Length: 294
Image 1 (cartoon, rainbow, N blue to C red):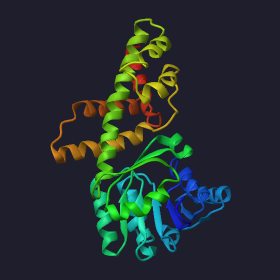
Image 2 (cartoon, rainbow, N blue to C red):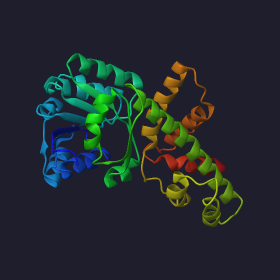
Image 3 (cartoon, rainbow, N blue to C red):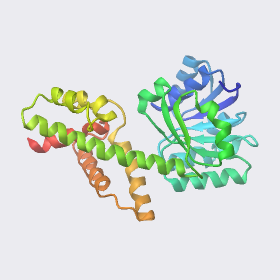
Image 4 (spheres, one colour):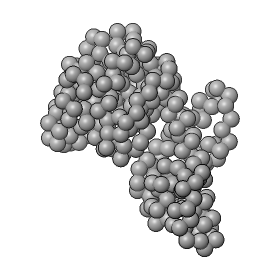
């Protein structure tokens, strides 16, 4: 384990809450901020850390500040706002942002922090709520390599895999690749289960067989049964996936890549939202197919 440090964690959602907890349990002195102060108090009572009323206050004595908020605007607000992290950040402190954002906002925030002598790593994560709770997240990092090397020992408290992928924004671009791949995989799985049901097959038996071959995936192993049962409260919500895919498609327009499947699945997720499934998890693409079958 890395030596004990004074840390701040901004954002205690389903991911940030356990991530901050892992840092405290690893022996660090963690101060948290959350817009819902009751949740910040709850975290402090559960883990024994401290809580602050503003991001600036949380960051005041921290050598590293971690954030996991909602989107580009949320990141700007907690970092650059009137009571944002930048107002309280100690000299030479490092910010590690785990929010999934655009690569552009990562570069924007990194530039403003660098002008004040502070380092920045964009470090979006994959692994979902279960990965955060179990301390087995995959962390994709962009930024200066020397700054990355300073944070890996601390991030290891909740990561199974940590990888530096290039300059600022590279972590966010890698997360976009992750979301592109997930979108196609989940749609393929949904169509396969939908076809098996329509063909009156024993769906569980089919999955048992094909999961031993080339069709196997994490989504198949972990989501097929809940999909068959029509249970869509396991993991990453459709609303958040659409937010991420908006970043993907905007970046694709910028770099000239062609993403026909991703664009189509994004439209399918918009239909899931119209069915009232914005808070369903991403495997609910099957619910859309079943809806149109009826």
